[in-house]
Image (cartoon, rainbow, N blue to C red; front, top):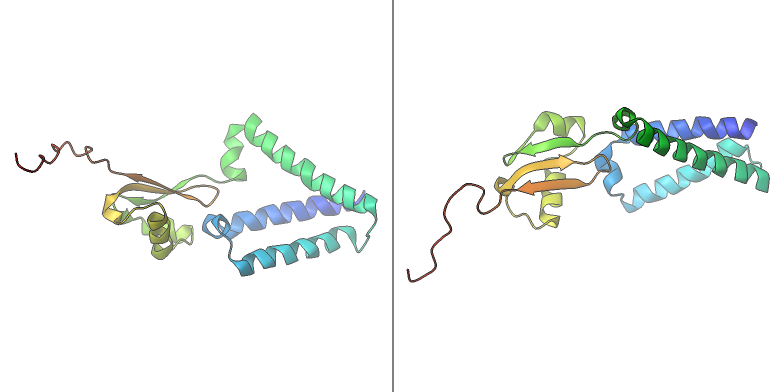
Length: 160
């Protein structure tokens, strides 16, 4: 039973850490960050099992993590209001081609990171972006103005 309690404590700690680290960090991991998380996993295992390498300890620890993951998923489904607390909400970070600096500061998102994400989606100028949203999972969504969104007529073909 002690292993289950230790696993519960570590699960909650890791959940809190991933929420505190922020979305932009979790969206894409650098090589160093990946190695850091793998190492952290080993340290978590040691703190949960107290160097108990038995199959039972491993099954209990992994089973507790899996059960808690399912419980959080079910909680979000059953009680939609908990979703923003458990996984976060999307945040508007750019409107009408202008970065919303306060929102970006709270999310620890730099303008350079925003521009990289826009370029990766084929967007050349921030003026083309109507809205940019930092999703709860760290990905960026861009909503660009359509060619006909301003109500202007299409350019007439050459020769007319």
